[in-house]
Image 1 (cartoon, one colour):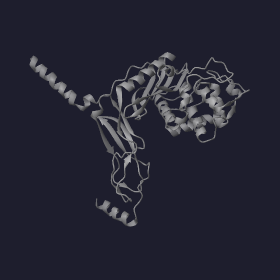
Image 2 (cartoon, rainbow, N blue to C red):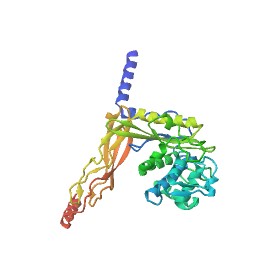
Image 3 (cartoon, rainbow, N blue to C red):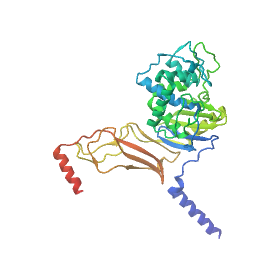
Image 4 (cartoon, rainbow, N blue to C red):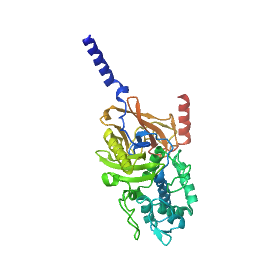
Length: 387
């Protein structure tokens, strides 16, 4: 009986180690003491873990991520200049909550107002920027909501630029992760503001000069992004870190922690997520930038085929030690008919481990394929018809 039982155990063990369903399970994330959270690998575009990611939450001062996005866009389009001085209105001066301590006697450079909003989380600086960009807070809030629609933030609605509690002012952990991702991607030239540890405007008190993102002082790989707190929202943090990896380069993770119990707790939970993400998953570079993933046939074109790939290197995050277990599959329409423009989205690279899809990477046309002449198009049309 004991021999039979041992044989059954051996058979079960062999089945488990050979069964894709058995080893395709993703690593179990740590317990996170927060209402909602998301952990993303921005180098691969994958969500590594999350809980209650779509739940409606109050963003508190994480609202200022969208305020910054709109201001950065105005700077990029030359509607605003970093050295331009903006007036401080009565409304900005009297804002409650965190402050930069500016007043109506001052005109403050945009560069300093950004530091006041980002480092000090100053509601007065935030309103001064909003009025400087749009002429009024109400018009600026409309710009914020329009931008939220463009970015696909489906669960987000803003009612002010600073994040004080207001009915209907809400977002989600998933939306905040997407907003932070786009902020990093679209405005890398301004991301240094989020790594500043201390700042105060000359002539103002030193009472609020220290960045509330405690991870900036604890982890040298952390370089942003923003904290938030109200009684309703709890303690919130969007934290990002980048660490070097051989053959891959810098790998960036993003943690969104919402509704933690204290300033210390939000930092600890975000640090826990970042450390787990770096330890539990490893980056694998599948293709170099502009390397063809596949080169399928093209009909009615001036060339017979088209390279599909990405302008950036294709990197995926896989459970540590499982790089040899991944497989790839290209999903694309067929037939492909010219013209095809460079940068056009066309097909997907599916990366799987066993039966678990890790990520679908959108592919692009790397080199344009124009239409062939009349005779060439007619000949290919006939061949397609026969096919």
